[in-house]
Image (cartoon, rainbow, N blue to C red; front, side, top):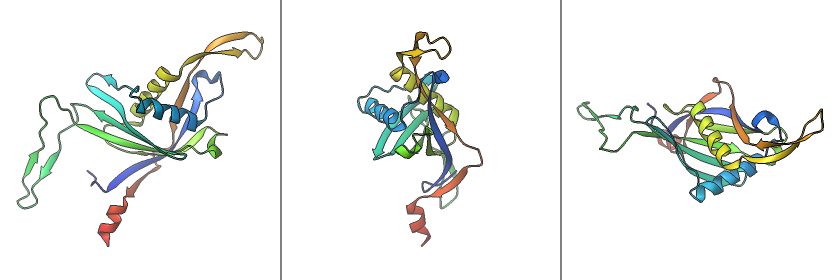
Length: 193
């Protein structure tokens, strides 16, 4: 288990597209700004699958840089084990009735306009036990589909017939597993001096 001052991060990109690529993708800054507004208005709900609950805990923006905090709780996550530093005995940090262990992961994204051409935005995602990239991607796509799907006219390329299709943005987390690195926070660096 890592200390509070160390984090493994997954270096990747988050691409923005639309379902079946019927339409051009929205700009990343527009999509995630709208997501941030929904969160501030309390309109982003949690997704519950079995006993697992995943939700957006916080969204912060600083110019073109966004940070999303995802929280997952699940009763099957083991309770923490603590060690007494004097006699090295162990004890379990036991949960109270109605509580479930929770973990959280940060997503940091650069949504600047220079990435709009490829619709692939550099990102770093905290690599945390029990929160998979698939769970994060599925949850965010569910939130995006629920809140941003709308009917839109589309001209078919061959027949030039106009049809109404769903405009539904989606994200894809792309990267290679080997793009994981250990990050030391500034507090950790201060302790080494």
